[in-house]
Length: 477
Image (cartoon, rainbow, N blue to C red):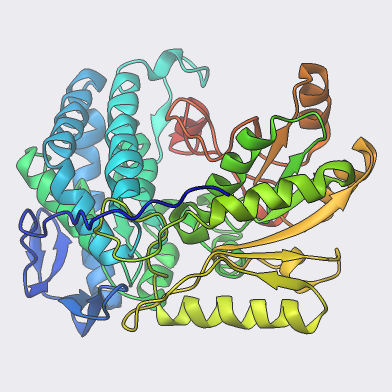
């Protein structure tokens, strides 16, 4: 039996964060009121209201886009080295305020503080540092000797990695000389609004970055605005389709990073203890609120029993609870709406004949919680094997041969990521070549770096973010 140690609570202090009672929109370098009705953002772990947030109506979005259009000329005319100075300054300020931003992210999103502190914030700063380095080298990026910025970039980001998704989009846009109107998710606006304060602190010229908060209608207004030349969206495939229809025929550049149903493939020669850690990181990191989560485990039949026994032992050691506790592994589900979707799909899994298992797990009475869950006896036809659950739910399927593994892994409308666990390098290369996924990890999962491109195929969207490829969408090439 694996020993399970009891840890004393080790909560991160909230004192480092000063949350205002209410927030306005950030337009043309200032916080202003919104014309729409305000809404509340809540702590999903406790359901307490954190702040009142302004909602941008169409006229507010128009004002933000016009501010970005006005700022575009002077900003794009700056030498790349001058733009880089602002990006470097923003990156350093993010590092200086990283503890505050991590706590704020955890309060607003529900993810464990260890993830906000040790994963999200270092990557946020790294993206600004990385793209700052490209700002004066665009002519050497492979897009022609004198590539030009597109203009105003309209960007809509999700709630699962609020500040990191902001960095993925704003950093390359600014490095290339574009200006930005960004709409954060309705349930997680606070770190985007804190980033607006950082822009002021860094001396970024007014209008270069504008933050408009609100729900879907606000994002739709950003996407549809005629002066927006580039649209970037990360979120659900359903909304991605709507955006593609809106943008079609307008001449706007578009990148979409949408849903996923990644296969994590374990062969019989894999280091199983290492694979178990990769499986846990692949689906239970951030409560499974990850587009590229390894939500389908494909395990070779001969090691299924051994792997599942080890996986269940490991899941018995995970700690679910207060996201601000440094010992917590599984935090809160982001919203009541998302929790209802997870429950609906897991109930469908049981009704269709899959076998459900969760470790002994006491759920807090307040907040939105769901235990880590594993389904065995899953068929390819089951909804839990085909639909994106976006929660801490793993579906286990088996295979006998490499060909069967490839066929099952690719039997999905999505194509965002995949994982391969084997000791054979030749098998890794062969499988990676045949898996229809934008990112393929080998003997690891969910590892990111600002120098590496990320994106999908099929219903997982198109275009790439990160690396040199991430510059192309923001350049007129």
